[in-house]
Length: 138
Image (tube, rainbow, N blue to C red; front, top):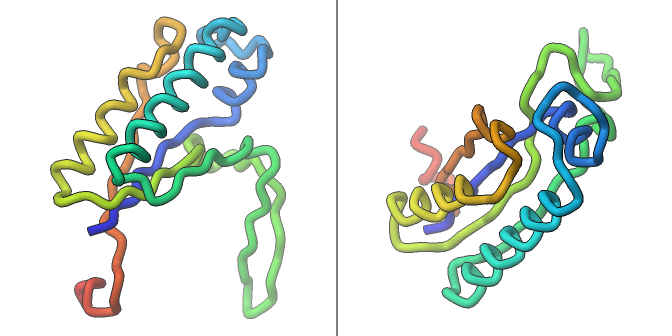
């Protein structure tokens, strides 16, 4: 079974990572390097185990466009969005034997190095990926 692990962040967190003063815990160049090294090692281990299908980071919310429709007329809004705090920051698609195993993999993301307090409210979602319409449950 394939699962998607989704990680989230805020524009403020992206700004803190890039060295801007945001009132959030400050990220030093060494903190960023440790995070990158952790992610590279994490991804390599999943690749070597055969469980990694794909992974990608997503750029900061400020570079987002939202497409909607009002009365059948499309409209575009540039991000970031005041009504949304956390946005998708990255994802992994893993193929493993169970939801529990996908949960174990996602839980390891909590070991990623960061300045004290930077990940106090961090979370990830794990969602099974439907291979067929019958998998959707409706």
